[in-house]
Image (tube, rainbow, N blue to C red):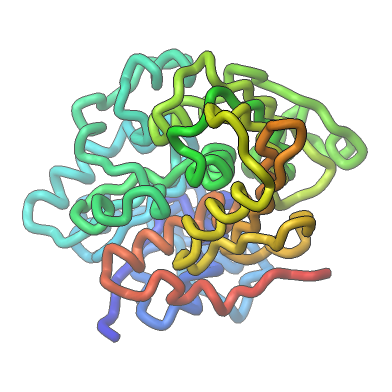
Length: 346
């Protein structure tokens, strides 16, 4: 197995740390640069002491051109809006002979429709010319496209959970109502009034109903109109994970639970990280937290297809899926460095 030189830009946020947790034990990866302009010169284990003895690399503020030149892959784990500010420089360096491929974990290059991006994110795009170079990193939907590109936009956590629940029924959805409950890590490292532990730990509340920035990702992949989706994102009193319930009004005349289960099981039969529950068995977060698995269950109630899905928002919902993309783009088994991270039962 040949060595892959990997750098992470934005290492000290939650998705950056999760990338590090995966890559430090990945059998094909050599870590080159851990970029943090806020903590340049410090060891990562000084900033995050839980990494002492696991990774003691010094955080770098190396120029982007050097990072690209010395890397096979560059992961961008930056806040939304930051990747687009540096992407032109990164892509010019990569096209100038450097080998680096880029996987962006932010929302900056997920949407091909710039108008939709600017409406849902509420800001002009700083580098719209770069959007067409990116392929959306939803592996279970378009593996062949991902294999052919240098630049991948990793999906949002709500968007990926929704798409995994809905994809087997694509073309058969009249409309869908989705309620998705997420843990506090989905809000990122920087605290706010709404994400403060003293409020979050004993509370549930919905937010951005019908306005969440992950809605157009679902529209883009599944060919749905905005009017066909009701999406209710909800904050839950836990740290990691998403528990999603999608209620589909099917365009089919009739469908049974057995038929819906058959469609789901057949569609995901060869996918290594999608586990379809037997009929009558409910999904639960504890079965997937800490891992790259997504568990899905289905039944039909009163003519509606009820699909439930759970995943870890930092793993399959972000960093784990990004590494799965890297594996695919390198010709490695998608499971490389990921199956060793099993679910945390307790």
